[in-house]
Length: 157
Image (cartoon, rainbow, N blue to C red):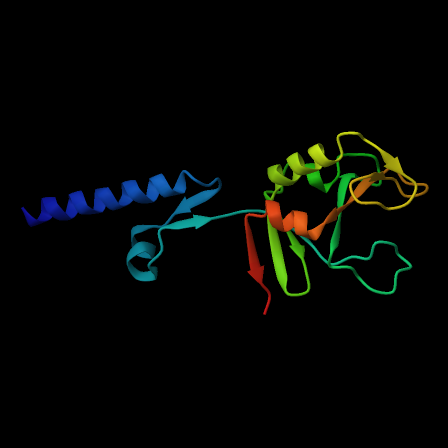
């Protein structure tokens, strides 16, 4: 009777773990040994493209944590990092935090903010910008907007 209870208990626990794992892509379940000795159930794997602090213009003296560049098309005119098939999330650096944004959320945000497809000769928020003699298309985004659409924010220190 005790064995039946233990089997039922373990089966119930596995069902809960599997239900939780469905919330994510790229998961791996622990082995029985890992579950018992290491005390973990689900390993979640994501690919994150890390974006450091940048200047608005190359000749600016300091980086600006209030903005971030988003690459819509690469310097070769191909899909930019915003549309990478491999990336799951972007981690945008600020002075004290990492702002974690899901790729599809950022894609939707940029599509809505840049729907007029207006080009500018100088870098401007939410205007498409192409650097001289390059095929890239980039735009500036407010960090506060990234925070608003973020999945989570992680303190650096």
